[in-house]
Image 1 (cartoon, rainbow, N blue to C red):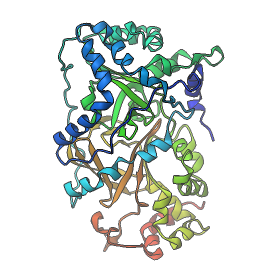
Image 2 (cartoon, rainbow, N blue to C red; image 1 turned 180 degrees about the vertical axis):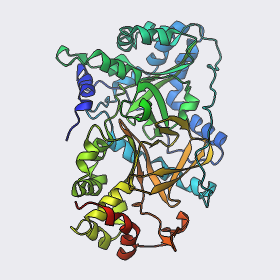
Image 3 (tube, rainbow, N blue to C red; image 1 turned 90 degrees about the vertical axis):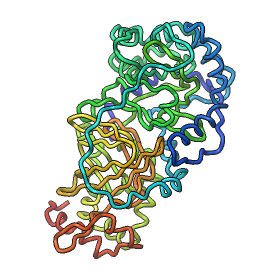
Image 4 (cartoon, helix red, strand yellow; image 1 turned 60 degrees about the horizontal axis):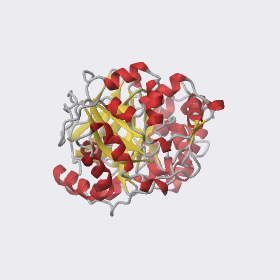
Length: 483
């Protein structure tokens, strides 16, 4: 397997050696918050239940309200006692794949989704044109008098992070400017940084990308973070369409509020004149490619990975030059739901072409669909609240996936072909995103040459027959070159 493009980032992790078992304590959180149909009620409930998690950090901020210079120190010191019992997670893969897959917030909110909307029959229409919502400066009890850079550079808890930033004058200028908009910084505490190892020093270019991945050029105070799934950063994704910003993933679960599923938010809402700082307990490392994430989870995706190998697509998916996009990855359980006959056929010599067509149908090149953002070669859009629809062309010629996204505050539901739910969202990858689907996706059947409405094609069938399955792919298989 070739992962040479992420080796510099692995070297970066080696350059900062985490002190053995240097720890922050776990921030406890009450039982999983029940979903609320009303956005205001939902966010109010979540904020209420997180109150005890951040009480000490907020206390530190309030006590420093008349002295902005020490606000960040106060926020970090208020959780310093807790910092002695939680192991900092830092994986060479730069992605906590297991935590991502186990996050599955949809399970907790599924009843609420069903009560709110089953997505019914929606008209097909292109993505609406809209502008990103305006987010003004900080709203809080006192007016800050220092920039986010001044706060970072004067804090005794972020000396290592600010020292690295200071080596890049353009970053310092940006974070010190009040004319460049409002920034959000996820600042790792000094205890998150390993001891310096001169034998594993990455290039300045790699270090800068690492720093940029901790900074967003948009304003995300804690309340907005709580209802956000992904956050764009200053780090341009080399393998994303149009070098779009690489994103951070936000998750609220039993571990508390985490970034990229492993880095805990331990201090919030340290406001500067040009943005806000949140403290995190682990370094944020840009993620690996999508296939690497799949490879890390054999207990969930071994059937899918076997299919890639059987069809000769493994090398293509694992290469550094394949197009970015969205991978709708079926889990082992999704394949199991097809039944033994279809599975036996797919992995036989005769069924190999059908298997390849199936894999191509789950792959959307050049379009990256996160749960709350849509990135295309010509630009990117947010996804509005309420219902939103898009048809995504797949790698299987002349076939698209019908996508419906429902947003209700911080709750997001994604359905494919009106029936299959995205069960695990936003596996952030260097070359796009993974959306795990609850069913193996199969093209809609046709009647008299016309495609049926996707809402009727599979939902009422307990198990698709082998003959029907083959009929869905027959025209494309006939045109395929022998494998």
